[in-house]
Image (cartoon, rainbow, N blue to C red; front, side):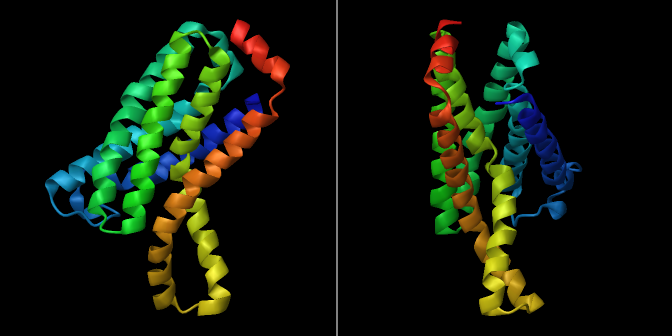
Length: 215
């Protein structure tokens, strides 16, 4: 990943994180953007959001050449990303998805959470084996799943716009339609991200990948 790309992703991640976290700064259940059943539901949701924010912001730093060149810093940030971001957020995603009551959300987000954990584990295992090319590939896939938080919020308005010519632009119906588009955006988000990342990985020159393995 080029430095400019990493910086662009970091800026987008910071902006998105600010928007996501803001309603939960006061830890007031009345400020929640999602309907919650009880205190446990709210606590798990807050834990998911805050730890996802850690992963979302720290992820791009791992792809910056200046950070990667400082191996101790890179390793430390990577462990924080996985242990304080991906792991707890993915675990919390599953009950949050199941509590949503929407089948597509339950299937889509639970699948994403499981893949998030698997790719994180494979990235860590590759690093331990000093297979840095595989480590980088798995981290790219892992962050693609992390970046779902951004992509889903882009896809939902786009899906809504596509529907307007067929359903009209009545404010009341648009609100209900936007709500119905959220599970679709959540599921398509991580699929689109993984497809994009896989295409990037496939295009990487084989010689560059071989050098990474030997470094």
